[in-house]
Image 1 (tube, rainbow, N blue to C red):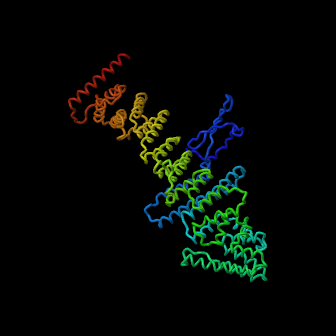
Image 2 (cartoon, rainbow, N blue to C red):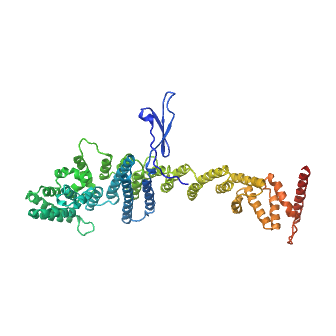
Image 3 (tube, rainbow, N blue to C red):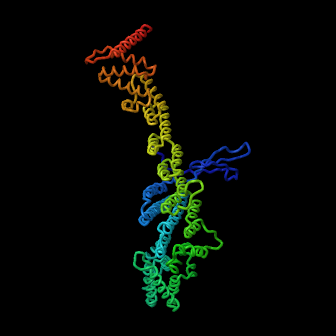
Length: 613
């Protein structure tokens, strides 16, 4: 029966809180921590500390399982295809990875809300935060590196990125619209401004219409704002308009908005005047709405939207650092997430991977993202000093972690298979550490090894299982495993045990196995004898005495019978020697002579035994 996942128990180590010296040793998946005291007295406990608890979370296991299928599918994409036809496939795979992340995140959120255990809720909340950050980084990498959107399209993708990760405005809008008087709701203008900041101008117009109906006197002012919002051009990548034509059109619209502001068209309504300044990309007004923007990267995208809509990928870093500096408090230290996003905007892929490896608590994210980027030919120039490239190094680390889990180790095999340099070596080392708790699990491991021609590991597994079966007196299973291992010495030993059991009990156990040995009986002389001797019994039971006699004679003369079994063979010959020949079969003189000698010897032994008795 397979083990079930349970949440890891938190182990408190008193010596750590007491400030004592601690020693540790890295294991394949865990760490052993122990107290090191110079004095004779003291604690002698050794504590096992798990370094990756995520693989024991039932919900996150779905992430590992689903992403494994996507990973295997990615490896099948042909490299000889032109980059134009491969790029859509890579973007689709990236979105599949993100959808799996989001599905796990939503499930964790539901569990966090429904659980009554405060500590568990906190843990789930932390996991949601990590997945949120992972999806945010992955999405940005998809836009900048995998899809590699050009100028014009780039801003549209960045707007989608911000909208996806700043979804609180939709919840707030729902509250406003469900109220008795939306236009008088305290969050009404926050919703309108938030829509503008995200470039969702059609939704902003719909909200403004509710205000316009309440203020008939200001209807013209609201109509003018509605016109400005409706006229704002957005680049259409699938259209016929060139980027230059779009830029000219956008500048004309920008000048029109600026004229309205200079004419004081909205001077009597501070809210509309703020929106007008936002449309012009006024930095001071944008920074006044830090709370609605939430993050420096939202500020960056909004600033690009209203000031530099045709920004090129290579120009992003000019604006990124300045937006981050303006938005964040000068005294505050950037969070790891800020540094990772900054590195992405600066197109420093390797820094993104390095910072994520340090900041995140497992290798899942960096391993899969690096693999995808490597397939996109974005990491070709970066090899490590110790032989393996970056992709393979991270995949090996991730897969090694999976191998410590009682069932996820099966996923790790495919990751090792797709590491051409060191994957097989790692697999050979790790597969030997899988505990063979049940015969079913042993067969799984064996099948994996046989498929990959790992003959040494196959023999090792079969020997372990054969020894275990023999200790439990399960001779049939032991013989079966020794045959799979092609271990002649062990097969001989077990065959001896079968023959000893026969001498003791007078019958064979595991007849199905012995009856169907086939060519496997040639593995050793003793196994051959066991199989043929059982065949003799079957012929005798079917009253095919002549054939039985011939077979018994061949067993006597082939010198493969153990010396301790000669008496049994001679005893078996006695009833055959008394049989009358019903068929006219000519026996050679040599055969007659041997049969006569066998008969005389058998009779002498029997008589001698009778006299002694």
